[in-house]
Length: 210
Image 1 (cartoon, rainbow, N blue to C red):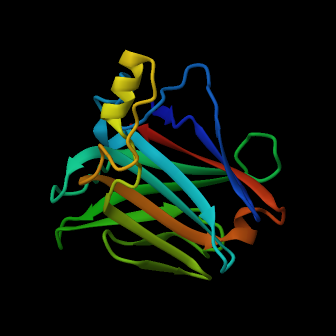
Image 2: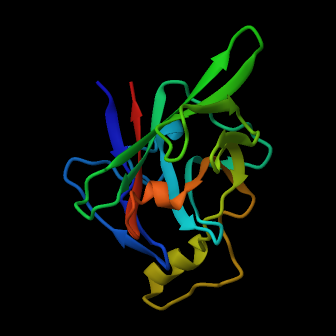
C-alpha cells in the first residue's frame, strides 16, 4: 500500500496574482523541514516546501522541495521508491484535474540517475532525463531535479525567543536555513494548459512510498 503524505499548503495561482492558504485534512501527515513526527523519519518523502508562480512568458513554474536540512556539498536525495505528485485543480472543486507524477530511476549499465515526470501539461509524453540537467520536454515544458540551497527563510532563534518571551524577537537578517540544501523538482509548463482554459488554479504536492 502506498502511504500518501500531503503538504498542507495549498497554493492558489491566478493569472494576475498568487496567494497561499493553509488547509488541514483528516488522516493526512503534514510535512515541513523535518518538523512533523510522522514524516521526519522518512527524509526522502518529507516535503519541505512547495512553490508555484506564473511568469511573464505565460508559463507556470512549480517547485517541490524535500529531504531538507542537508549540509552544502552533501549529495541530493534520489529515492527510487518515492512517488512525487503535483496536483492541479482548475475548476475550484478542490479536487485534482491534473496529476503530475514524478519518480527517480537509475541506469545500472551507465551508473546514472534520472528523473521522469508523467502527465505534465503541454508535454506530448513523459518528460525524462538525467538529474541535475535542464530537460526540455518540448512545447515550453522544462524539467530539472537536483540539490538547491533551501529558499525558505526562517529565523529559528527569533521564533524560539518569541515563544519564550511573548514578544516579537525576529531578526530579518538571520536565516537559520542559510547554507542548508534541499532536493528539488522544478517543472515549467504552459500556464494555459495547466489552467484548463480558466484563469485561476490551485496546486499542491504529495509524496507516496511503496
